[in-house]
Image (cartoon, rainbow over all chains, first blue to last red; front, side, top):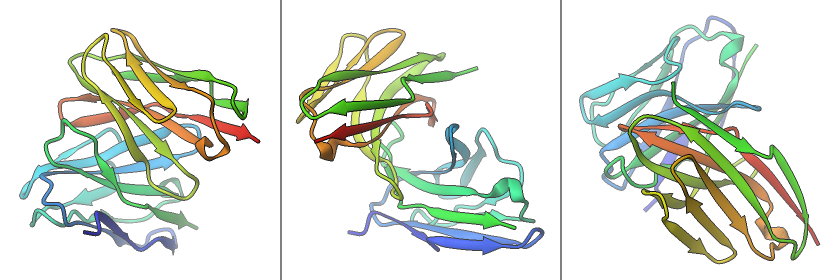
Length: 112
Length: 108
């Protein structure tokens, strides 16, 4: 039982490049979310999903896309990376959305 | 707009010196208030969920309480291993809104 697995752990991108941050959970959780964490600002919700095939926008969705084709996977796509997207990204999952979310260990992304 | 404010931003304690962290919130339709612990370079680790005013939860040296406007995380007789950033989050619908956190440093 690995919990929530995020890959890669570290990534450097050039401005304008695209990439996908991977997130997988093996707990059969319905709810999954993506957050970014910046110094002094706390975690901010990017996108979330309440089940396979269902996604919605969070607080800071611009520049990011998500899809949820299976219960296990919830990838986050950066369409055209910008320096403002330099951050630490966390994926989280929850069985019902009303209990504590389990977080992955994060992806540290630098856009130069 | 939902708001979550944590204070203080940083707290330095001597081992054994008890203290409290504050999380004040302004939300509509609170479904739950969560406390997380985050160590450097790691993801947040779930500690507690509180659902209604008056509720209390305890785990080792930590105790969380909830009122209609704020929550407190009390740290009793802290040890150096309690050093971490403590995050508060409120849930509205299916979404969590986080405060900026309180970084606690406990010196031996």
